[in-house]
Image (tube, rainbow, N blue to C red; front, top):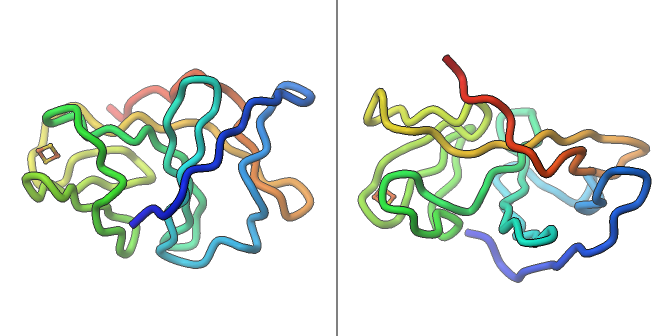
Length: 121
Ligand code: FES
């Protein structure tokens, strides 16, 4: 479950600082607001990720869902999504999660674009 919200308003060198990568434990979700984007940033199954806090099933916040082993389960109807590929695992063909490009530099996590990554084919 994502606790508080951190608003990120400053663009420095074309990226947005999302927090210290070392402070993100496996299974953590952090809310980050970046210039109108409501993101969930986390670490699971050995990888960091940033996704829009929006379930593509009924367009509600998915951030109160349960994250485990790279999958987030929406609290509304229980659909499960892979946070790294964005794909809905419990309803193949459903629109996936919107994912955003991130980078880890010097132990810090950055959003590198406000444009979502293309959906997996
Ligand atoms: S709104 Fe997320 S599964 Fe229905």
